[in-house]
Amino acid sequence: MWRSVASNALTLLIVLLAGVGIAVALAQNSYRAEGPSTEAVCLSVPRGATMTSVSGDLADKGMIKFPALMRVGADYEEKADRLKAGNFLIPPGASMQQIVDLVTRSGQSTCGSEINLRIGVATTTIRVRELDPATSEYQITADFTLGDPTPDAYDDLLSRGFARTRVTMAEGVTSWQVADSLNKAGFLTGAPVEVAPEGALAPGSYDVDMASDRAELQQRMREEQEAILTAAWAGRAEGLPLESAEEALILASIIEKETGVAEERPWVSSVFINRLNKGMRLQTDPTVIYGITKGEGVLGRGLYRSELARPTPFNTYTIDGLPPTPIANPGREAIEAAVNPAETDFLFFVADGTGGHVFARTLEEHNINVRRWRQIEQQRSQ
Image (tube, rainbow, N blue to C red; front, side):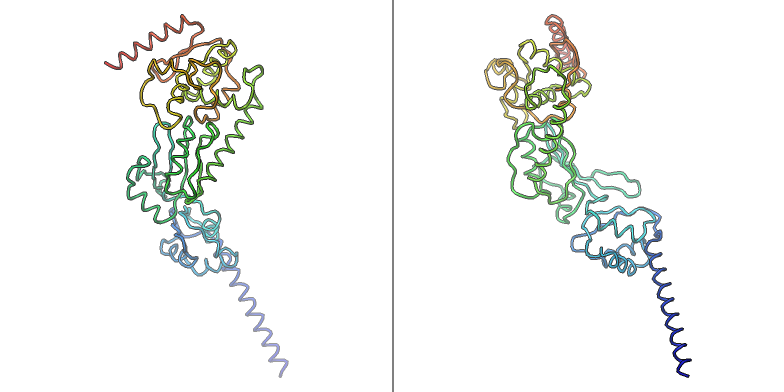
């Protein structure tokens, strides 16, 4: 009889184990299976949230059916305690496993609100945008000048403590403008940064975490510019009248301030290279302006004749060669133009009234172009 009891017990155990195995397999399949959602959803995960609260929120939004199973799966993958705060775009049909991966991987917001500190030559602004998950298009909710009263949409994001944040630095801004902007940006942290050497920061767009350290961001900008300059100098044309990468950076900053038309940069560079080769003074207004402002803001007016005649280390109407330092932070294209100028015999250029310039080989040609530009200025002032 005991053999019969033992046999039945063994059979029952096998059935139970098989049932457990089947249940585990079904649970794993459900955890990895396509979810019930048919539309993308922007999931906000606040600081201090737990996998329990997040799974419950997802169930309420119709993104998952079994919140308890999601928590068990996250525990099994040892991700339950890796939850990141942020806004996460959950695609249609995302499985619970995919969702757990999204909210534990990086913490970089992929939807919701975006704060963009935009450091421009004339002004610095903060733009707040909101992503519509259904259309994947951003809508501007706030746009204001840094230093002005902050709108509610911006203050609300700062109080919540997370959003996608970035810093966009335009070509031609000065290092003082960058330091001033970073120090005033409320979503950055750390001690105020010092003004970096002029020209040492790479323009561009930098993704940052909210509460990122200002000094670390500025160092990223310096390292990026150093890499760009090193590569450009290594690939420079032969026979340039430039003795070092630093001189190339100085020339690039002048090119950057002289034209915003990308196609013109190699031509503008050729004018300055030709002048340097001939021992002619550069005679460029942006260097004179930098000698007056020291890069701290915009002059906001034309130059006076007395300023063009007043000797300063940056007045290229009175000094020979290049000024002692860059006059702004040039972008990659201006740096590459400085070390690989177009092959021309141009020695002069002046604005053409369309945002670009007209170039000349002789002073006589240049004077004709200048008279045309003066006529355009007079017509515009009427």
